[in-house]
Amino acid sequence: MKKITVGTTLVLPGVEMVMGILERAEHFALQPGNELFQKMLELKTPVGRLQGINRISVAELLTALYLDQLHNFCKWTPIAGSDQYYEDQIQTMVEGWTGLATTQQQAFYREVLQPVYEEVHDWVARFDDSEDSWHIWYVRRLGLDVIIEKGPDYRIVDWERRMQLAAEHQKLADEGELLPEGAWLADDEAKRFVDLLLQQQKQPTPLGKSAIDELDKQRREVRRASRRPRGRTGVL
Image (cartoon, rainbow, N blue to C red; front, side, top):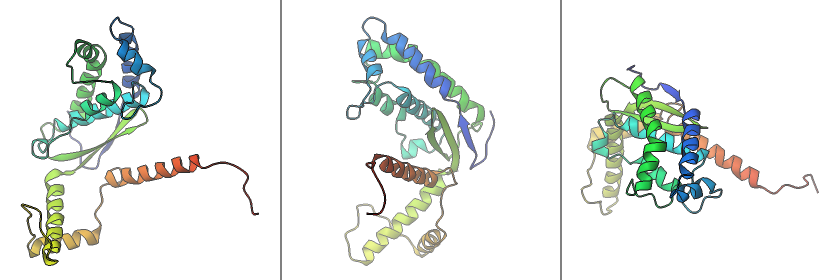
């Protein structure tokens, strides 16, 4: 198990896993009683939140598996709470998914998903620290692969957030506004810290959240540009 430093970025394999899930899902859907899964494979246009089973939704599921596995190594998840990204994503893929409550769902997990779940666990175990840590992980899909970055210590990030929130509460108090229940007010040292933090404009590393937000912004602009009507251009 290899220990990696903060800010290290890794591209983890996904293409073969994604295609393997799809191949096993197609085989599974042909079995008697599994018509629902065949319907999900044939779903071409998302219906509301439902995405169906396709390359993109499966790649998102793989990303969720990596994130859940990484969170298993994090000491802060019992404190902050950890979303079940895998469960949330599979519910968007399979209509009526209820968390292995039916025989068909149990068989789908066992025959289609369990092999890749174990493979993801093995990959995470190869490079993660030898013991649980307080670090945050940034995880994002990159095509059909997955890109991850080891982020800062959760305790530092949480402390900065609390200091900023306390400064906001103090501002409300100074303006005579009603404070939220249990609001904590910052002392002078905390106020000075928040001022310095805002001045420095601290950001995550290039492949952290700020870069992800910027990438999303650029993609939205490209999509908007592609939807503009085409026609003759020029000066009238």
